[in-house]
Every structure is written in structure tokens, then in C-alpha cells.
Amino acid sequence: MTAAREGLPQGRYGRSADERADRGLRVLGAVLGTVAVAVVGWFGYDYVAGRTLSAEVIKFDVVQGANEVQMHLEVRKDADATGTCTVRALAEDGTEVGRLDARFEETGTGRIDRVVRIRTTREATGAELVGCTAA
Image (cartoon, rainbow, N blue to C red; front, side, top):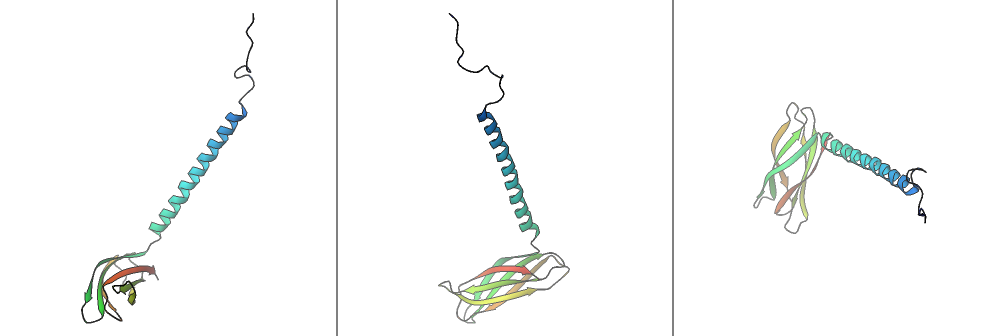
């Protein structure tokens, strides 16, 4: 009795359609993954390198009875950059009771420490830095 073959001889007729499709999907996945990493890297670099002015609140003090908040800001910037930082004072219920746009026009230094005074319409309990923009 002779043995009957059940399939095609291995390697004789090239790759099957499934093997070609798997290879194509792997190549497509590698290309899309590389593009995604490049886009994330681009946006990350642009966010970090594109900033010429940033600030941080060191502390704030609410002046009792004077309707005023004193905020100590530390501003980091390029030596020749100027800009504005917006700060606001908040009441206990979270409403805004004062706002100030503090200008930073000093050149020749990369770091500025300044205390700004925010006048309020009523007593404040907190203060926050809204953001900074370069001029």
C-alpha cells in the first residue's frame, strides 16, 4: 500500500496568503509605531523648548482687612525675553475676587523673584497662577 499525501509539498509553491498578510501587517504596525513615537517626541520637544517664560508660585499671603493678596512669584525665562504672568485671587467659595497681569520686562537675567500685590473686591482665601505669555 502506498501512502497518500495530504497537502502540498513544503516550500514548493511559495508562501501562503496568510504568511504574506502577516508580514504586511507587521510592516504596517512598525511604520505606524515609528510615526507615533516621532509625533509624540516632536510635541514634547516643542512644548519644552518653545517655552521662553514660565513661573512658579513660591508662596502667597492674604493681608487681613486690606482686601489684598501678596504673591511671591519666581519667573524663569530666556535672558532677553519679556512677558506677562496672570495671577488671580480666590474667595472661599472659589469665585475670583481679584486678577492681575504682572509684566516682566527685565532683560539680562534668566530668573526673577518678585512679590506682586493683587487687590481684591472682598476677602480672599487663596491665590493661583493662571499662566504666562511671552511678549
